[in-house]
Length: 241
Image (tube, rainbow, N blue to C red; front, side, top):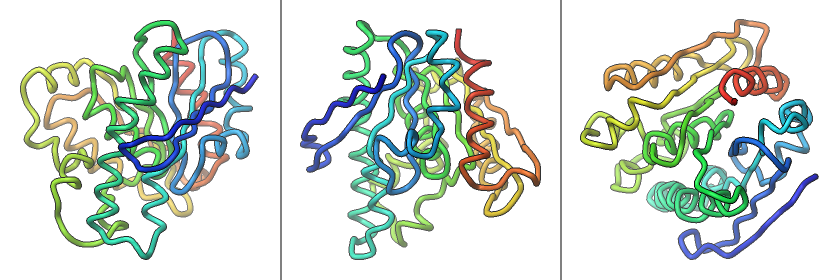
């Protein structure tokens, strides 16, 4: 059973849609690829591959519109505007979407985040920025340097939105909490994949004492949905109670 909710976000200056599949289980927020909407994961059959976890009452799958990802595709927007949207999108997830998930679950349960491509960036950014809300991140076929897509220039919004920028200076209670979380960086080495992105992120996480691992699924796995059909059910089966 699918349930959808939609509201206007003042932070984003646009509507946000959140879809849910399942009734019981741990909340898992799956971010779409760039430009995707809340139902992309269903259209591309990822939800179908997660159905055993849903039917077993182990997972409630949520997804939301990739508002920031769409900014990457807007050739008329400046880099400053794109970085601003990424920063505000992350704030909206933490302050609007996750509270809505908590309400739906009947309490503030820790959320697992997951995503592929730009969704992997969203997942890494959310767990690093809001470790008090996120228990684990499954980052698949990730691209973690958004500035190479969003345009040249450096802004405060880029700093706060991008873990590769803010993690080197992170310390205190936030870092201590993050050191009790888990980040999985999975990638194939087939067509359109760049596992070097995962290793660069892992090296930074490791330098800060943040638990992580890189899994190379090999040359038979391309940057495409069939790869993520295999990856995400495997990792969630391992992570979830």
